[in-house]
Image (cartoon, rainbow, N blue to C red):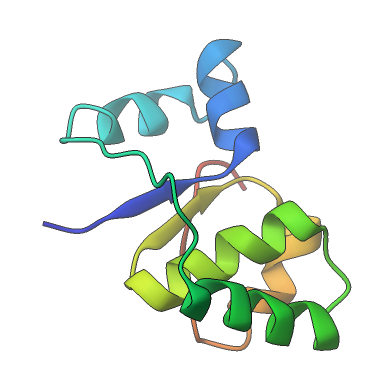
Amino acid sequence: MPEYLLDACALIALLNDEKGADIVSGLLDLPCRIIETLHFDIIREAARIKAVNKMSFADTLLVATAHCTGATVVTCDHLELEPIEQLNRVNFLWIRP
C-alpha cells in the first residue's frame, strides 16, 4: 500500500474545505500513522537538501522524510516544491493545479 506524507497546506485545505480537500479526505480513509521521531538518515538528508535548495525548514524535513521512506508528498505548495519535483527524487501528489 502506498504511503503519503501530508504537507500543512494539504491539511489546511481539508480543514477549510478548500479545493483539493476531497483528495486529502480520500487519502485519510487509508490506515494512518504519525511519525514521531526523526531518524538520523532523515536529518542528514534534510541537511543535504537545505544546503542546496531555498526552502523552509519544515518543507526540507517533509521532502527528506519522503525521500528516506519512499512516501509521496501530498501538497499544493507549487512555489516551493515544484523545483524539488524536477529533481525526480521524491514523488508528489498535487491536490490542486
